[in-house]
Image 1 (tube, rainbow, N blue to C red):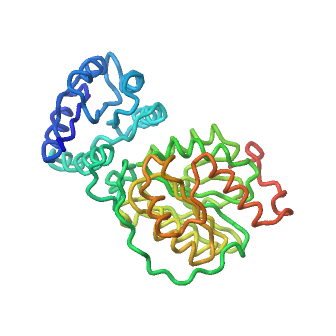
Image 2 (cartoon, helix red, strand yellow; image 1 turned 180 degrees about the vertical axis):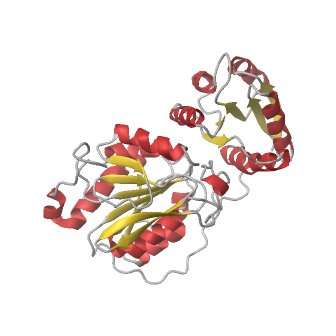
Image 3 (tube, one colour; image 1 turned 90 degrees about the horizontal axis):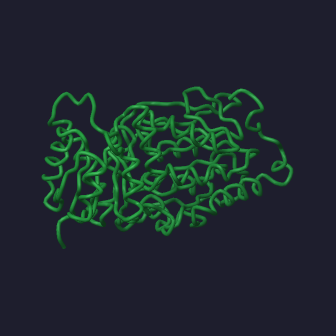
Length: 384
C-alpha cells in the first residue's frame, strides 16, 4: 500500500510550510503538492491525484467554500479537510463548508508560544484525521481534534469492542423518559441539522447534547439549529434550568453536566480534565444525567470517531434507561455508535432519518397519552 497523498491548499506560505513539515513526520503520508488559492488547487488535483486535500477557509481569488463546491462537482468522494481560524468568521465558514460536503476540519493553532508547540498541535489534530479518512487508522480510541478544545474527528475503522463488565441492568421502560441526552462527534453538525428540526416543538422533555467542537463553533451551531427548529436551541450556560421543549448544546472547551437543585434541574459547566481526550465529553454529560434522572434517561449516540459515550451508555442501561445508536450506513464515522451497538447497549440501531421519530415516540409512549398531550413551551411563546 502506497503513501497517503496530500494536497495542501493555503494562501500563507508559512502555513503551507508548517503543514508540510508536520505531515512529513509521518512515514505513511506524502505531500504531493501545494497551492496558494483555490484556482491553483483545482488545476493541480488532476495532476497530482491526491488522496486528501487540506483546504484553507479564507483565501484570495477563490476561497475555501468556493473551491470545495467546485471540487465536489468533479470529485464527490475526495476527502477534504478544512483548515480554519478560531474566529467567528472562520467558524461560520467552516460550518458552511461542512454543509457543502467537507469531511472534517482542523482549527489553526493560536497562542501556542512556539512553532514547535504549534506543529505538535497540528500534527495531533490533522494526522489522525487524514489516516481515518483514508482507512489507515491506527486506533479509534479518541478523536484527536477534541483533545484540547472539543474539535471533531474523522472516519474510523473502529477497533474490536472490549466487553464491558456490566451489572445486570434494571428492567428498562418502567419509568417515563424525562430527558433525551445526545452524544455526537464527526459528522455531527449535519446529523444534528437533520435530526433536531424533526423533533416536535412540543416535545415534553428537555434535550441535552455534546458535540465535539471548539469554543465559538458550538454557539454558532446552536444558533443555526435554533433557526431551523421548532424547539428552542441554545448553547448551554451554567445555571440554565432544563425546560421541556428546549435543546442545550454543550459549549466547546467545557464539560456540561446536569444537577438537581430542589425541584429544578440545572446545567453546570466545569473545566475538569478531558475524558476520552474530549472536553466536552459525552461520558461526563451522560454520567450526570443518569445520576439525576436515572431510568428516565434516553441516551442517543450519533456519528463520531472513538468511544466517548460508551461508558455513559453502560450507566444508562444499568439504571434502566434506554439507548439508541445511529447505524453504520448513515454515519460519517461508525466509531462512537459502533462501540455502543457492538457492546449490546443499544435498544435499536437506526438510520439517521428515523432517529427523531424514534425519540419522539419513545418519549410520548413512556409518558402515557395524557402526558404526551401536555403542551411544552412553544418556540416564540416566552423568554428563553
